[in-house]
Length: 292
Image (cartoon, rainbow, N blue to C red; front, side):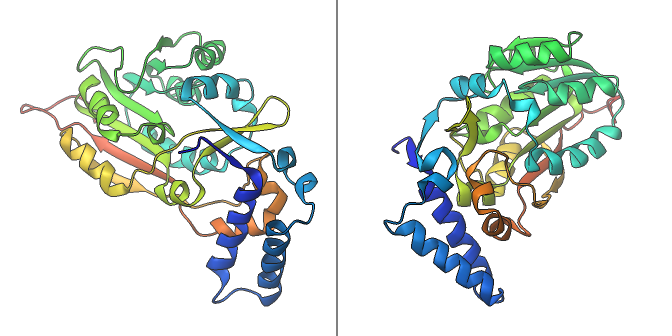
């Protein structure tokens, strides 16, 4: 893997995906526009000034460096992924009594705030001190700790609930992260895992964001099929209660390359699930458990 690519290639890919998905039943004018845009982008015609960052190379950052850079703007940017994820997660959490909760890979504390508002006592864990500083400013009452998904700084059976949002995709292998969540949640407890849908990662690839004023960068995502999640949950002794797949809502990432080709981008993602939300439980031991 080269660890970099160009914005021009991303825009070409979005145009091609929009053309492919609409080739059978799409509007002819829309299809001709896509073909013309692809022709111009693939030719020597000057289009760089119309693309984010002038069509420059997008470089890869490691998760720690990437989220340190992203932390300054993370809470201020609208996100279709968060907008479709939060109502699903909120409905699950509304049915759970307050207890001890873990926000794993908590970032700036989005879910930490959600859990605190529902009366939970919250431990937040993230590998980025910069993200934790943001979380601490929002939620000083939470117990925030530096740590990794694959080695959580918690004792066995120490929380009633664990939430992990939009983070597992950065792990090359799901199994260690899922096993850690299963280890720290008490029998009878619940685990809510959300992630970018494998459709999105397989088609789009990486987690892009604007670094600094204009420069685009990315943190690598890994494709985890739904079957891979089921395998990891099974290996950790967990039981799946439900799987939700909320669809793209039309929101494009601000400041990124998709806004430059909005019609094509919306057509490319229309009707596709962009997030997966897993509602999972740790089976109770014989004799039952207070958690419901």
